[in-house]
Image (tube, rainbow, N blue to C red; front, side):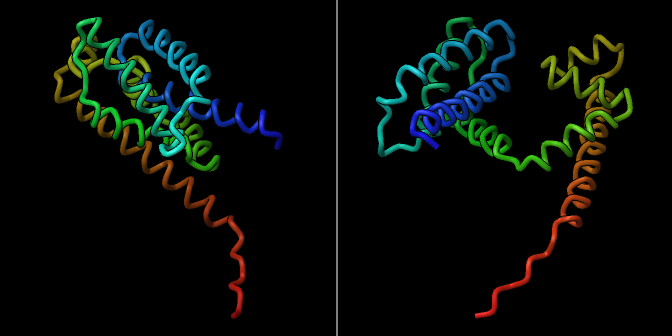
Length: 179
């Protein structure tokens, strides 16, 4: 692959991970979208100035974390520590590095969930509603919503694990090399 294409691919990966970190830590969608654009622009502009002694992922996470904290402070929103954001950023990168079989298992399972499970997961994770807001909107107690979320996550987890078991079972076993 030519160096220019390699650089574009690397930058796209860094921007995707940065956007993932922003989306899971910034509640306001407009602020999150604005931050995604700002971070993507900064990463593209400063990639060639990155410290060669620091991994590109760590460098991009550092820029993203700084911009998230600045935006949240400016808006008066509660802000996580840099250490907490760093841990979340590493988790987002790990999820992004999942093999395609794992991602397709998750997508497939999300479509198979009962409506109630899909709804509570959507409210909580896609719409970023708090459990208290979900309970109020549904006219339910908070502990009922917590149980519904727990059951939905358990269903999703069991389905994904089942799908992955099927994928693993289909994978051919390669013979060991004799030494």
